[in-house]
Amino acid sequence: MHVLVTRPEPDGERTAQKLRARGCDVLLGPVLRIRHLEEADLGPGPWDAVAVTSANAAHAIERHSRRLEMMRLPVLTVGRRTAEAARTVGFTNIASAHGNEQALAQLIGDRVARGKKILYLVGEDRAGDLAIAVAPHGVRVETVVVYRAVAAEHLPDAASAALRAGEVNGVLHFSRRSAVIYLDCAKAAGLLDSALRPFHYCLSQAVAEPLVAAGASRVMAAQSPEENALLDLVAPA
Image: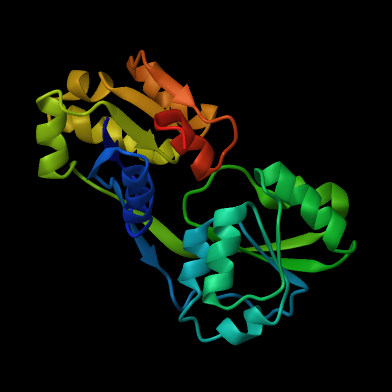
């Protein structure tokens, strides 16, 4: 199985290592580049907890001047990978929803009292609105952008060549935006048909939608929005 991973670094290489352990040959073709906003204005605070729905958001505050202030707070994360990233940067009081944004909203409702305030660390482009999701629980949300995912203008040469030659059996997509950028890059290079031909393994149905709309016929979505569930589509452990 020859697999193209479109995930940005360093997560792309981490995913590649897991796929290689499952017997896949992996080609990295990131369509996004993560830019941390290490001095993002967090506002005055104080907060009662931190919420994170992306490992990139956790890593973005690793060098922030107010990092220690945040580390003292409990952090509520959307899933296991995000919880691992939070632990890596220094959080110690960590709870994971092990699900999606709605699951995180419920966790916040269970853990944070009405009238309290959380700091929600996000990327510039994101799906959903956690503030709306937690509104029924009476929790206030201050949303702060701490990283940007910058779109690639073209696929890496090696990825383009492999797609054109029909050497790619499957492509992994971790976000709806990255799937759209993959399609845009393929169109710009004149290889859309070749780019649609492999199996497309998607983190969720929402991620799969632009690929289906573009004409991909072999599209699969993970049963849960977690990396291991996605990898199980490609090569079961």
